[in-house]
Length: 368
Image 1 (cartoon, rainbow, N blue to C red):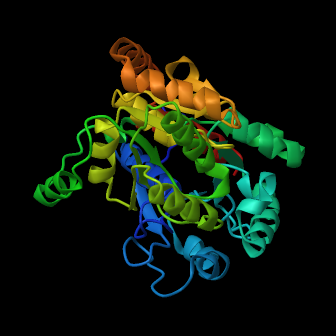
Image 2: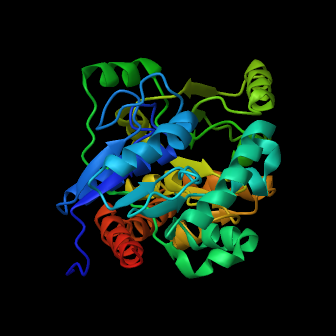
């Protein structure tokens, strides 16, 4: 596609570049690679130790509010892209366009899932960021609608750019990863849950379904990959109680991407009944690898997963148990959903994300 505005260099929010991979961190790296593949030079600003302006021991908030504006004044880039929901500088830098990516509105929609301090930071900083932004990228129509419900005044500068998922291709395990997976001695068929253990992710519904399957005489193994998070204590306590009465639940904590994706590839079923996602990348990753996914009917997952995943209500434990049981024990059912999932997920590429993001950059630069 022919570029209408010259975009040689972009000042790029790298505040999560050197941190353990999160959803926003993954977005940062994948978008950066896709933009660079199109000849865009990125100034990676605010990483802890790498990039063009590492912040060192300085916190991300202090950097964005304190040092970043002066760094942008010295930068040759005409545009700065903030990637973390709300983390634009509070003031405009003359001659610079601002683009902001909003992934979700969770702290405002589900305030009980975050700390009070973070909720207030999110609310106040987001309110300012959407005002100073020239353009806003939302990763789903769901997130766009949630943002506009609170800030209808910014409707004219919001674009929806779905995430990509093809980053899962080509990752290979090293010898250490292979040895680790072998040592786990996982059964041939298992259900995988991947994500943090907070209330929003609705892990309790997966545990409810597991109890129903055992009561029917059809127990299943559950593998859980993900870190503890705000409010995860009740889930961890319940898992311990269920193990004590014979449930096979393997909690593996945070894993490297090659190990995580191999666990996902080997899983029989991926269960992800989250009550809200701004996009919902994990089920799409599973779908691309041919692992049937079960998602909830809430948030952005119906928009993203479409007809490629089974969907159940966020309180429908019987429905989730039925769907898990069918996929665990019916090869034709599993193949049908695996094929449907691959077709849906193949539509989401980082090359497309980069192209659509460059169009947003053009629109932002035209206003200078």
